[in-house]
Length: 142
Image (cartoon, rainbow, N blue to C red):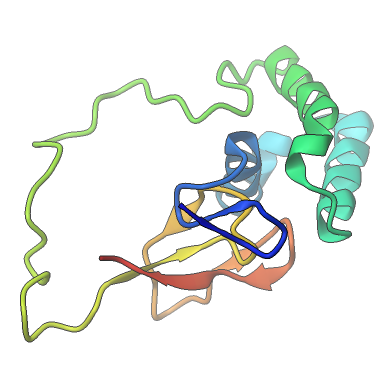
């Protein structure tokens, strides 16, 4: 595993799992974080601390509070990324463009490598991390 200068793991699957789910919710389901004034203050506090450079692991108590609010609001997964339906098809198949003569493949990941969120690049829309307010970075697939 590669590490950043701060000693944290780097790569599309590295980092704090609840941070990845928090970022995903901010981007794709911001209404799920509409938890009233207390929830809004918690989300603002969490994003401010992360943007200031505080490691996500030091904010586990804040993640716990946010998760508790989500659970009380009826979000049964909290900040987990649990699936209720199985992923269709075989787990591993060869990529049709992974052979010689094809451009390298990449995904977009956390700009700081702090969470495991990844997205497929979309030429029509620039993806941005809503936690850090920066564009997602391209990570080549090997």
